[in-house]
Length: 293
Image 1 (tube, rainbow, N blue to C red):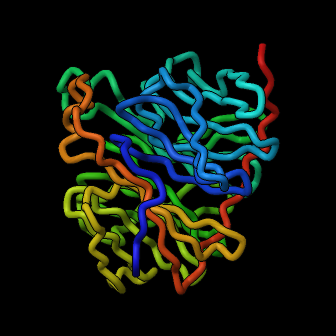
Image 2 (cartoon, rainbow, N blue to C red):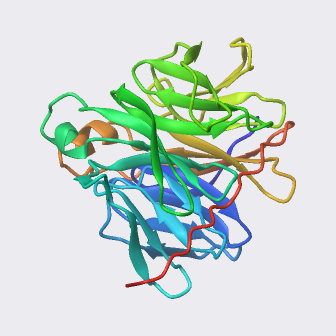
Image 3 (cartoon, rainbow, N blue to C red):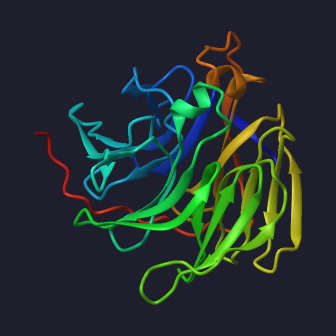
């Protein structure tokens, strides 16, 4: 695959998403989420918000973002913002990282304890949850260390999750919406974001190694692609035929520096684009009713 940079001179890029408005991405170190428009212009929102490790697109065009205090939303058309979820059963969320629409208007998301990370207390406890359009929250997986990429199989019957420092785990989605016991799909611990293609292949970003893997549903590795410049953090499909493949990358050493509360000096984070011979699974939009208080 031939990767071409379409965005450059950022720091710690994450959360790629694509729609007719452009290519969306965040910068966990410098803050905010951004959109590369078709005319080449880059627009920015929530510039004071760092650690946006995941985003989803709502059906009204609003963007849902993770971060240290839960899930927030922003309307790029007006700049209006609000809180979608900041507590579960009265307990404040420690933070939200990656996410994936569930195809029913709701959202799967993973939590992350940003305070523990900043204080050097390993990673803290994390889990995977589902947020329904009516606001109901269901805990699906608990006692995880580090939640990262989430994706769904083409038939919607399996959920894939990158548990960084452990591997990529596959869960069956049960009839009641809960998840089965997880099975290890790929044991590479260097996993960050992921995306799923129409054949069921799981594309896994290996951050420190600088590779993109494609793993079949049976766990066999189909492709191992070296990424120019390395340090790939996440991956998504887009375009009218879902064959446009986008990767986000980070400046060398940026995750460790940001985890300690610092800001990296280098600006080598990029968004890369390539064409895929296999289309991705179309990502649904969430259907939350979002309005400013």
